[in-house]
Image (cartoon, rainbow, N blue to C red; front, top):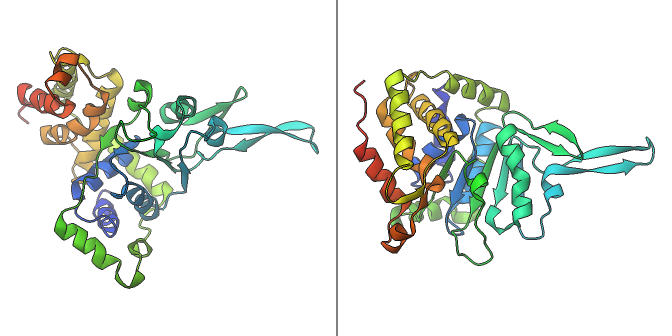
Length: 310
């Protein structure tokens, strides 16, 4: 079914102009079975891209606009007493969708943010001692404004580590912005032109196919070496976790799948390495004083670790 991915990307491009690389990375994140975090300033199309993916993939879609007033029970659900049956009945929360858009997640309280942890890791929620499975496939598509923006707080490290990738939309070029205006002339909404090309069942099949993409032993050693380098780099106070190793392998498989291969090559690993790693790394105070960024360190690591010849 990997041939269908080209059509899916084309549909999303109907509403997102000039961001082919971002669309490719986001789709790889969904196909890997992971969760996607988009960090950027307001108004660059983060929510629009999530909605375009939900329509194109035929996914049941839910959205919560996070504010300090949103409660954990709004997300996970709650139990209420039913007078007729004289029992407590569970009322599902807003997270029970195939694609859950957590809009401006870093505006919520830390207590509410933590309500997503079990769902993102185990695909279930526990309320009043009872566990409820989430629908499959299940993906959290979260957006956040840059750290330091008004009304925001940092996401906890445990939650950041649960996102398979963090990507940024960036501003469009002049030509892309003009194309965006052309799409919307005469009051047209390009989202209305987005067609459904798949379904939740087909996405389950594609995710299963991605999991079977072959990764050779030299490539596994390469992935481990890249992650291990983050743990000893002089500019990093904290490197990547074992969960990051799993994410890098699954994203590499998804990237190979998008290019219609049933095996991973070093270029796949290198292409996804920045998006998988940058949000998991903690710079040393000295590196921050020298205005070094995690992306700079990631590039250094890729250059310093020799890729296997396959």
